Image (cartoon, rainbow, N blue to C red; front, side, top):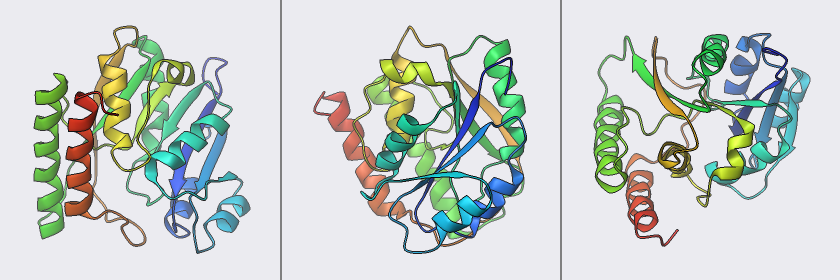
Length: 228
């Protein structure tokens, strides 16, 4: 609870029984509801989440965007916060981000991830420069300048969802929600830098860098042409 407004943490999960434990256990008390969207998991994600006090809703249709749409609809909070279920996002920063949302009279925050100790690996290299490339495409097509268009940590007033046209059921949902929020003049949006120590995800990654990256680019082009 923050200034009499309830806060829901929405976590989309597909086979995240290990990572979701760390996310839930690390969530600050300011969060009133932890909502896990079990996206057709084949492991014990739902059972584990419920045992730790989270509310679980099921979305059998696999898809990052599909899971979020279901989660947003089910969430009871006035302010929604999102993180992935792999324990890579710093839930410890939620109180700061929620306070900033209120203090700066913002409607929507997208976190700009600044990793302090990434180290080198081929995967990190591809993620970093793939993100830069998608940022440039986003700017070129929509005029939106973001440092981290792929961030999955957002903090926003639930009421803004009524003004967003969200069509993507896949990974491109992450870009689409930012496009809709930042392009809407009635929504006060900001990208907020957040430093934290990089850690490898808990569990196996569901992201295919080349396949999902290509799909994201195609989606952006189609949305710009109003085909989505």
